[in-house]
Amino acid sequence: MRALLLFACLLALGCERAEPAAPAEPPAPRARVTIGVHVIDAEIADTPARKQRGLSGRASLGDGQGMLFPYAEPGRHGFWMPDMHFDIDILWIRSGRIVHVAADVSKDDPRAVYRPPEPADLVLELPAGTAQRRGFRVGDAVQVDGLGP
Image 1 (cartoon, rainbow, N blue to C red):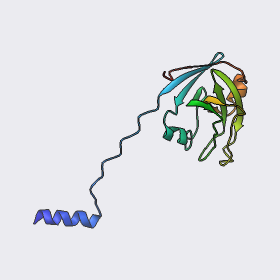
Image 2 (cartoon, rainbow, N blue to C red; image 1 turned 120 degrees about the vertical axis):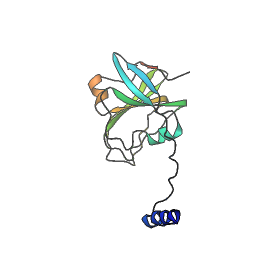
Image 3 (tube, rainbow, N blue to C red; image 1 turned 45 degrees about the horizontal axis):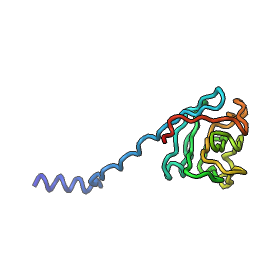
Image 4 (cartoon, rainbow, N blue to C red; image 1 turned 90 degrees about the vertical axis):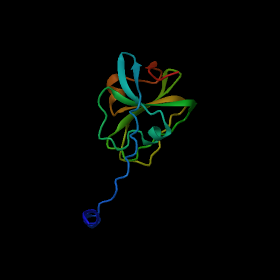
């Protein structure tokens, strides 16, 4: 009788059996990106889901931090700003050299797609103004440690 009463109370309260939580995605790996004397701590967007999500939904990105997008093949990889809450700089890199810089890309045009004029195999997103403050230019050498083979 008590079990039946307890069951009736739970039903009345709308309690349901808890579903097991989905496993959390492990933290993204990190790389150290060096451009001249400047070092950037970059989160690596190493899966299709991380590449698609990028920095969307984040409140900000700290000075000296970035997000690195590696690609198996060089291409004119396009980037857009859906659900972005801050402006960024985008650096396209090929074979260890910056090939294009898009500075102060605005969060206010989420449908615009930004592409380099030539193929790149890495893309680095940074807080807006970083490229200008640190003097990053097309042709600068870029070294990446921690990206893997």
